[in-house]
Length: 225
Image (cartoon, rainbow, N blue to C red; front, side):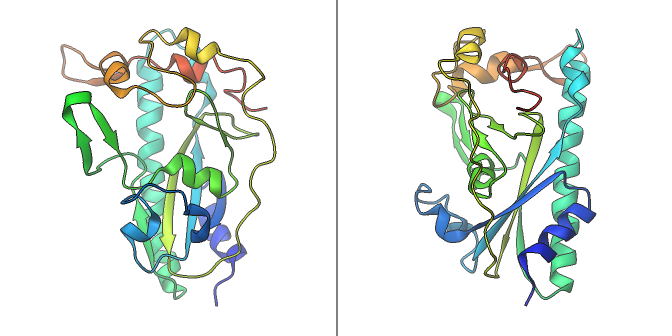
């Protein structure tokens, strides 16, 4: 039987900066249709991991460095999950790769609302990688919110990691809410209808740019606690 530490070692050897495990029982409050077992009926645990982003991109006056770094982190997270799934399969453990970003199926065009097949933020939180902040991003004590998440659904019972015990948001801090140019944050969720047109733009050359990431940048804990 493959142990939890062996699974995490595989992820770290392949380049994960963070890795944690959440037994599937921790997902009791997941919305109907978005529970790990709605995706993979044999799932017994979720292996969540993260790749860090270089913090210097937040200091650039152009959004291009941030856009490329974010895209690269997504590509690396997906590649890492793909390679980890193969490595775990060689050890006798079947897993299902969850995309780090898209594609996803749930889309409500009238309010520009999309939802991934599994909430990676909540999966990472339940695996002990961090806590959710008022800007809806996960905050990790070492890397702040400058991380890109990924996950694998595995068919083995694994020991879970303890939940993060630290506080992510400072008491009464509303910097992200007050600073959002689109007014898309309320401290609990992000209004995608307001956020998407402001944050994702296509320039005259046809490049998609992540134009706004103020909520990530102004967080006092964007780079760690």
